[in-house]
Amino acid sequence: MQWLLFTRRPELLRVPRSLLHFAPEWTMRERIAPIAADRGIRYLTADLDPAGVDLELDLRALALPDACFDAVLCSHVLEHVPDDTAAMRELRRVTAPGGWCLVMVPLDLTRAATYEDPTVVTPEDRRREFLQHDHVRLYAPDIADRLAAAGFDVETVRPDELGPEAVGRAGLLPSDWVFLCR
Image 1: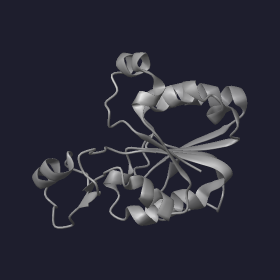
Image 2: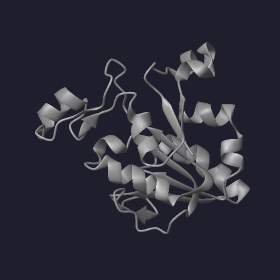
Image 3: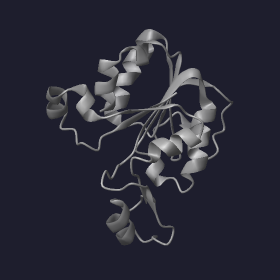
C-alpha cells in the first residue's frame, strides 16, 4: 500500500531532503534507499533494536532535534508501543513544517474505537485480542483522530482510492489504510 501511494503521488518522494524510516521493512528499504541516494535525500533507518538500522531510537522519546526530517515512515510500529500518545507526539515533533509522516497500523474496521486493555499481557492473550503476541492494542479508524490530537493534519488513504486493478495486483485488504500526516 505504501509503495502504491508513492507511485500514485511521486511528489512525496521528490520533495523531501531527509527521510526517517522506523522499523524499515526490507521491501520498502530496497525501493526507497536507491531513490534517496539518486535524489540526494538523507535516508536514515531507526528502531528500538539497533541491529541493522542507522539509529537506535525509542519512538516515545526520540533523541532527535525538533523538525529534523521532511518525511517519516512509521509502518506497523505503533501497535507495539505502550504509550502511543507519546510516540505520535514525537513523530509530529520531528516532522518538519511542510513535511509528512506516513503511518500504517493493523486496523479493525469493525470497531469504532481502538481497543486497548493493559491487563492483556500474555503472548497468547495478546494474539487473541490484538492479533499478534507482541501487540498492545488493536486500532480502529479512530487512529486518525489520535494522530490529529498529536498535532497532525491527517489524510486517510484507503486502498479502493488506488483503483481496483492496483488493489487486486497488490493483494491489498480493505483495512490497508494509510494515514498521511502533515
